[in-house]
Length: 137
Image (cartoon, rainbow, N blue to C red; front, side, top):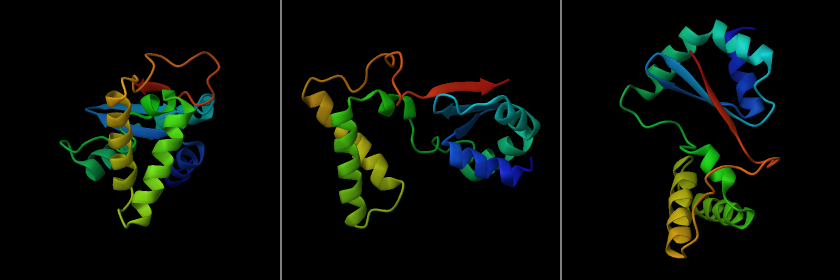
């Protein structure tokens, strides 16, 4: 698998990569990290790290979504609120991903004000919205 093919596959599967030093970290929907994907990531790890460092820079914040597992653990009504607010911000001309980030921060603040925890400490077993996270050494 070539690097462009791998990047297209990661996008299609909803796998988000980030670099922390010389380690490649990932967040993915359950079942997305197949042995084929893990092998391809290991094969292209150096190129992916260079690409992430070149794109983000060493001091840049991680890519959106910053906390995909946290967003996935929100109750469905709060995720719906986030989606509606993000769409409204986009309609107002706020570019991607800023509209999603701003909606995330606003809904999280609203949840906190209402004394509702922004996310459960861990996803419930069988939660189809949970993300699996890991890293390649």
